[in-house]
Length: 270
Image 1 (tube, rainbow, N blue to C red):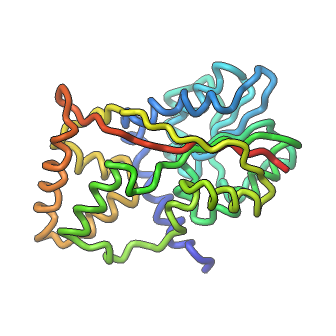
Image 2 (cartoon, rainbow, N blue to C red; image 1 turned 90 degrees about the vertical axis):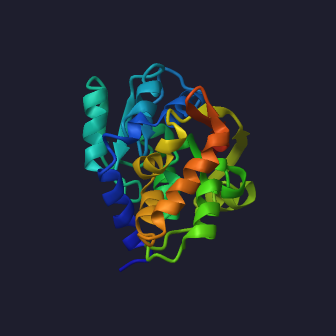
């Protein structure tokens, strides 16, 4: 079995389960329009979205060009997107093994999917292959854990009260693409040249109250659910209570509003 294949299956199974809940996470839908702007779209562009999930990115892109296709490796996500946006095109596809001809798209778009690819180098190679000459790839990744309260709080609580050694499948380094130098090296190795790397520091409304945060972690993240659910059952109530307590300081008008720093990366086919 190839390295990280267990992780790939773990991720796929997890996203198959989240089709009906992930789209409710307000943060992602707030980010999509900002990220799509980086594509600098024209009405003639042919665009492929990878890891399109419930379809918000494809929908936003369709406001500028009708030549857009959303793809996701989770069949249930594809069906959810079709249900939400029946006029748009979605199909199941593996970003690491795309079935499109070479030089098929002017632009490729991916919001936070790179973080979930078991073999991101394969996905980048496929992006380059399907892009036309000088084609553009725009993707987003979360800022490193130490810069992000949402991910940092979970990591800190687990470190103090639980354990990370709970048997989850090992995946590639989660922060490779949130570091400018490392992201540039990774892109260059696959024939893509970084032309922009910027940080967005907006404060977003999660749409959840502090008491709902343990549930939110399970609904929007495969690894976060796996990490929580694998904790010692005797310790889990204390862990969840501490999460609720930590997020109370971010509560405004009943919901958690907090910084969600992320990176928008733009690269061009060399």
